[in-house]
Amino acid sequence: MAGRGDKIDKIITRLQSRISEGQFYEAQQQTRVVAARYTKASNWDAAIDILYNVAQSLLKAGQGGSGGDLCVLLVDTYKQAELKPDSATKGKLLTCLRLFDSEEPTRKKYIGEMISWSSKYGEYPAGDPELHHVAGSLYAEEHEPYDAERHLILGTKDSAEVLARLEYEWFKEDDAHTAALYAARGILPYLLTGNVRAANTCYRLFTSALNQDKASQLGIQDVSSNSADIRVYPSIPLLNFLGLLLLAIQRANPDLYKQLHNKYAPLLAEVEAWHESLEMIAEMYFGIQKPRQSNPLMDMMSGFFGGGGGGASTGGGARRPAVQAPTSMPAAEGLD
Image 1 (spheres, rainbow, N blue to C red):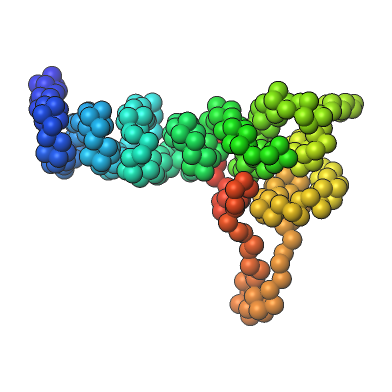
Image 2 (cartoon, one colour; image 1 turned 180 degrees about the vertical axis):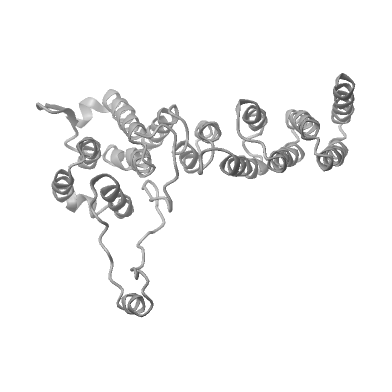
């Protein structure tokens, strides 16, 4: 065993020396050839060790394209070996991920391959939460909100804090009355994935930052009752709606939700991008069926063939800053 390990170490050292000499392309191609030989022999440990170490060296040398190519090949080797996500397998992938330059085009492909592998071989259909959290946090640091949101929504229990901070920083570039639109970008998707705890965390952290920065400007009022204490934002009524929605979900009372929705209906009508999300939330948490949009032709076809006719869905592209409902509701970590 020791001899075999020494042999792999020597191969890695030789390939890394090519990188030190500036022979980046040669190092990349030779690594692919050597790794393929070990992969063909099902010597997964050797192939992974070689790819992992040489990819790191290329990335550290600023060779994102070559290093990224070997990173993608590393994930492909994981798939061929049918390795499951654990601290060791994920640790290698995340070590490489953190070495990418933010402008490197292959990084997005690598992230996608990582998530795909963890989805197929792990316990989370939407991909491993830790991988999502690290990818989302990197995008958040780089002020890439759309990419950050996609991953943080499916991340760990720590992701809600990162997402709330991101949305608040983004909101600060806009007018005070738009606060609810940014807060909702975290709250509604978390509710759609069944992660009530994260939705509440997002609301609490966003509003805490808002209170600290703009309390005097917004005329915030504290209202207490026997059942709850809430803060009211007279100039941001949709933010009040989001807070009351979270309280209503705790009570799971359909009548309470209907009253809430009716009270804010004129304002909600102006935020078209929320409509589909709220319909799904009403069904998930209150058992209120989504209104069926009648389509006479589909109804007739349904009658002929015994299928379930349905109207066209009314999803539209979400414009900044709005919320668009995901097409599916994947499992997320830490569901409440």
